Length: 446
Image (cartoon, rainbow, N blue to C red):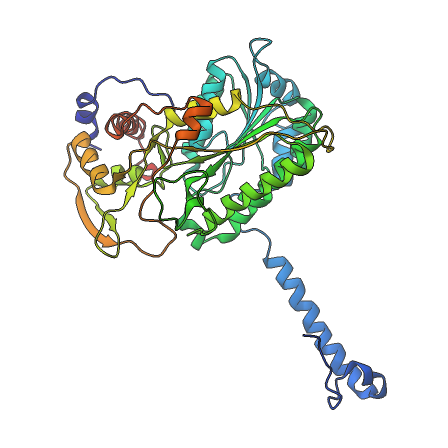
């Protein structure tokens, strides 16, 4: 903590935005012969009991154990009923938050609004005059306190964040009944590549079931909103062709997270084809910046370097560098807003398609992959602390050795052009980090 004050003075004052079965006739248990063996009935009943008991246990323990699932009944009660959490005027507050400042402004539902990118996108929409309503379940994948702090930032800007789960169909229906959303900016997801090895069910629950739940609500709305959603560069998986283009194959995912995002893209195609929903998918490439996610390398490297802890730097099996196409969050927000501005209206109404609808996918990256070692060097310079580094071989946990975005399509159709290099972006991040955590009195918040 004592290293934080000099770091603040060291940084410039830079503004940051945030076969069929044949029964064995010789067996006494043959079902065709059971009626001729009355003595077998007790034994058959016993085995039936055990079988049914096993099925009940399977159903009981197969319920989602992930931190993103939430409790839909509790979410609905806390978010929509007259309760101390929101008071009796929740519907008025929801509509006020979603009301644009001008007649030409959009009315946008942002899912995952208290998440990293969701917060920045929400603020970007609000600043330009759009109406924004946030939705987030505040799961415990990482520090909920950080998410609550982001929520406070949004509320000070006039953005209400409803605490609830995208799998809660009743909640979604009530929100869509209260507000006629022109757009849905779907940022909610179970993030992280490595965590899928610990809790795979959370990815299916949030990234697949949750996405379907949201699309079901959108298809039944009248009018249907246009949808912009966060896919991921992870869908390129084991693809060795670089830079990654939207036309490249995406059928070799290296992680469950990537597989669920790829599944999301196919699900989006289905709802677009059947129901006329206008859907745009955005493949993010390693987004970083202020208010970021603590599970990202740049974030926990900063934390561990300041605490004097050893950091592990991955290398490939042939001792090559691991590199990422780091993309600053403000650049990603510009891409998101451009995708929203160019999204055409959905063509369906009340679940019925009336014509062909727009379906798009874009890469949002920086086009300049940087080795992780270079990332660490920049952090050492900004923090004025020498890192204790240990280089190890990259484990088989779903990570890929490199990412590199081809953004030609996004540049041509969206006008997307990233302008922040890694050193400048990290300078803004470190400035936020030492300010935010330096003001914390409890060491446990680190």
